[in-house]
Each structure stands twice: as C-alpha cells, then as structure tokens.
Length: 241
View (cartoon, rainbow, N blue to C red):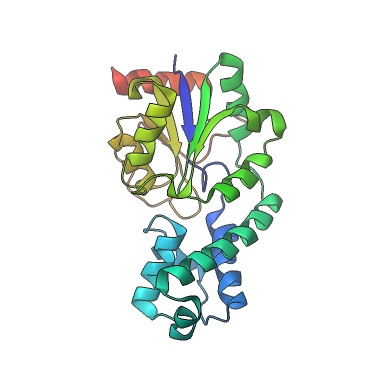
C-alpha cells in the first residue's frame, strides 16, 4: 500500500498551460506594452523550459529584449519578476473558470479514505497553485500536507530536487510513494528521485517520450475510472519489485 501520492499541478490537476498560463503571459505582455504574443504552437516549444520566469528569459534571449522596459524596471531579471507577478495575478483569476481534470477529485477522495498522504510538487507560483486547490473545495484542499511550488528549490524540473524535497518533507522512501505527472520534464524529475510515476497526458504532452513511466494514460477518468488507488498500488509494487 502506498503511503503518499504526489501530484504535479499544470496539466495534471487542471489542463492550464494553453488556456491559462499562455493567455496570462500574453495579457501581461500587453499590459506592459511589450510587443509579444505567444501562439499555441510557440508556447508548445517554450514549454520545454520549466518555469515561467525561465520561459520568458528564453523567449527574450531568442527574439530580443524590450530594452525600453528593461531600462524602466532596472534590469532584465527585474522586468521578468514584474511580468511574472502580473501574469500570476491574471492566471489565478482565469483558473477559477477552468475544470478540474477527470478523475482527480475521485482519486483524492480514494486516497483520503485510505489514509494516503497528499502533496503537490510544481514549478508554478504558490499563489497560482493555491487558486487551483481552491477548486477542490475546502476539505480536499486541507488534506494536502504540503505544496512545494515555484522557487522553493534552486533547480526546477527536470532536476529531481523538488521531489527529493518532497521525500524529505514526508519522511518516506521513494518506494512508498507514487507521483502523477504529465510531462517529460516532470517525469525525469520524479524518476530522478526514484519515485514510480504515472503519466496522465495533457494538451501539450501527448507526443512526448514517457518510456521511464510506470504507466501512461490519457486521464485518471471518472466514468469509467481509468486509474484507481488499487491501480496506483499495483504499479508501485511492479515498479519497486
């Protein structure tokens, strides 16, 4: 029996990348008077870089920095920080209108009933993940023992640092846990920490390489349920045998 279930946020709990984060970046650019708009196709490529601030840095390094705004804010990273703060505010409002992915609430309830501990490891900002967890209702949100978000670690996914931190927080070995991720960066981070990982593919990740995953499904599912707590126990046993 697994003792802890750890979720990524974006693409796992809510399919946020295309219709929340991407839109939030574009609205922030417009509010700052920056001539940049990320298309669905461009954002797919930018997602290869984990972390919103890192993603904007990669974009501006490739397409050119808005030097007037860099000067106004006192440097590139100061501009990035201001943009990211506004983008987080915007996306925290957008996410309240998005649906939780199928099966997420059900699997949380199964885990709670069985005494399985819950946590989140995400590169998203803490304010944003707080808004996502609000979608679950107060009781489910309170059941999450920890949320490791944003800049809580020095190296973001695919580095395993955030999942190693989760294991330290839980006081458990990797073999007692299962992670639910949706991207290759996330998979490399979780398996790098030695944790068996289930992949639920999302809008932008369907074609990624998930060869290290214990199992890959399109979603957790509600009617029918594609993945149950019993399934998570079985894949953990198979992965750690």
